[in-house]
Image 1 (cartoon, rainbow, N blue to C red):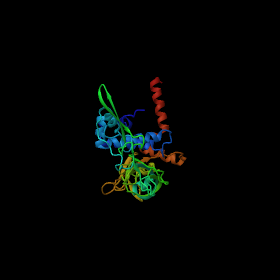
Image 2 (spheres, helix red, strand yellow):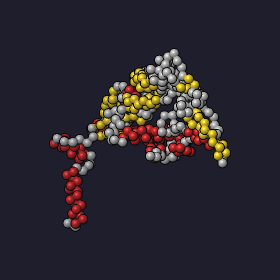
Image 3 (tube, rainbow, N blue to C red):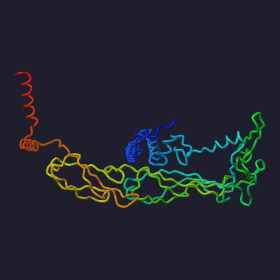
Image 4 (cartoon, rainbow, N blue to C red):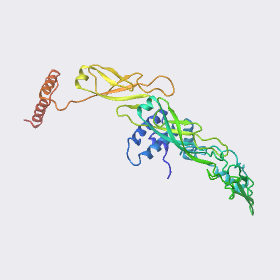
Length: 370
């Protein structure tokens, strides 16, 4: 199944600015977050949105994607480490007998791992120390990665003589063709293990569950990746271990919403508070603060609490908190309250419902010619 265009996934044009891409990602990430959206395809859509943002938010990746699309020859966009195009070298070797040979006994770096960690809203704001448990392959302690029984060592393959490849030469009407393939005797390893290690059974690696301590920095946002160097899969033949990438997912908050380093919230006001003004308490991420509401405040007005947002992950200071006030229309009024509102309406020169009914009757008579 072919992938959708990344710009289409985020719902932006190809000329979208980095801010447009970031806003589109945040909106869709909130919409499809598995902790909020319980639809069967929500997690897949969340991953699709995250993948598109990872590419389009990086200037170099975006430039390559604009040039090559999903068929970038340098790096794949589907996951960790990209796509392997090494197979083309074997095709050229097959038909033209050229190309450099890879040493099967050379050290090889281990694979990278990815782990998804879900944290609370305030944990992302203030940071936290935690531990995660990662299943991964590690070098066997018994044979130290050789795969051979202690006291023995692997023998060089007598079929490929340690190259890990077999060559079949054919003379055809088009000339000499060299067909190179993986050695069937040693499976491309260049060595044969006669006495295998009883712990790892000749693989040189064992599966273990490792506990890793993480320091999540204050200000980390949903979708961020933390790289833990050397905590991936074990390397082969003395090669270094891969890295661990921890993907952060942040649970939504009941009251606060986050946009970058700023926090948004919505607070109700009574008609009297909006009309006469008041001083109210506003919850922030750390405390309650006083906010002065001036007389005549209209619904949907925003107030800014400077420095009450999220600590900046890269830099100094904090974002702001933006408070939206909404004037609530009262319901289930008592007769006394209704009477006072009618009196207020008369003093304001407004028409009450009863007065409007009389006006409508007069208009109706005027149209009918009564």
